Figure: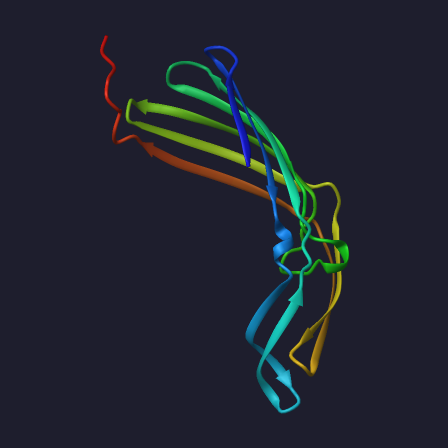
Length: 171
């Protein structure tokens, strides 16, 4: 992760980050004792599902805009590459390259107490298709064919309580 913060003036600050994730270390997802129908009736089997994730990049830019001493607006956006390949995509993670648009605000009620509210809309450039046959144990397989629309609405609220204001500097 490489992040940057720069005050443009006393009211505006710019923020940015670049993140590289080494997803390629995840080769399979192993599930143990999965309920399944076996040749002997209902039972439990183990399942190994190949993932073959690719490494991926994420880029984000944002700004803090100080309206007054108590209120600050926040805006930003970003792009996040998927680690999944079309042939390896499954219903546990029907992922796609996606964009994020965010807005938020900070309200400083008292010197030690503040509140943050944020909203992010995540959306993909295109719908994704899952078309995969999985092996379940040594005797069973199942097929999944699905069309997904990977998007999400995220809402966050937090209270910030600063317990230690630090030592005041004296001249």
